[in-house]
Image (tube, rainbow, N blue to C red; front, top):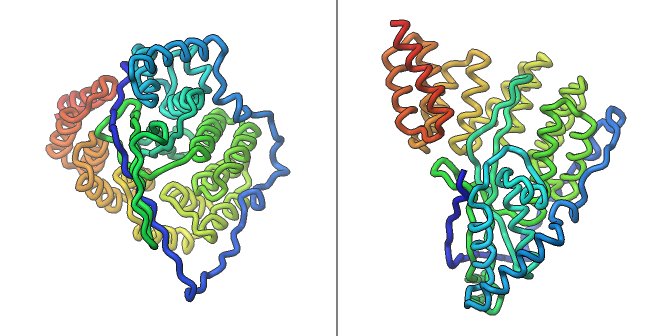
Length: 391
């Protein structure tokens, strides 16, 4: 797959601060994740250090510096050097689901968006450039075992120009607005991506470790998953997705009570996400706690959801036979993002279960019209052909 990028020359960062001497803040007694994990179940394993994640070989570093020197002599702005190098060196880069270190990404010419964000950070560091990140929610990835759902997020990187270039400040007593030039690098951008929020270096590291933890979970390497979750927690201890992963880990280990304690601790801390609440609801059903499952269902209703989160809910509901709710959530998602092919496929499944063959066919045709992934397109066309043959 070709390495695609999107460039935005200038970014506006809005930082708003306000102070109040009269308002009293409610103190929330947070429960750290490490306190609710059943550590006795697992054995800690060695994991990659932060240095190892971003480290480049001496040969690659020298090659990049030689390239940068030529670019700078040609008057290319420093942040654009990173963009140009990635564009030239990774022309034949192949998207692969594995989360890799910078060295692995260069050597294999493959990796996912987190891998490329890590690599970009390595090059930016060599040139002394600042970076920030944007997290995008994209197509969900569904694990086959235990009806677990993993939602794949990807990062895109803002590499800032040197501070003396393109910086202006407008400061008043309640807000600071900083305008700074930079280059936004988006890896494999698609219109299916939904902006999720800003992110920083700690978020990137935590996502790196949590991705590896999810892979370890899928491969039933529970001790490694445990170790990687602890590593990620060092960087983002308030991330609900880490509590979610830890809950899933304990479910896999057979400790349902600890899983429940982990999910509940997250909610008590106000660390909530669609993934966490959905998995907590599945656990409550497994434990036979109908009242808790209903309470969690109400929480899901009241949370604003992006299209992929709605799709995750619909898939869970369809698996448990709740066709009405699944239908409602898919239709809500289509209103938000009518360009996502997967939504029409899911709605087609619902219409098929309802015995509405003609609508099923129309929805499959719509999914085929929107889908650009050839492998998925083949699946959709096969489903449509199978449906036509049953008439």
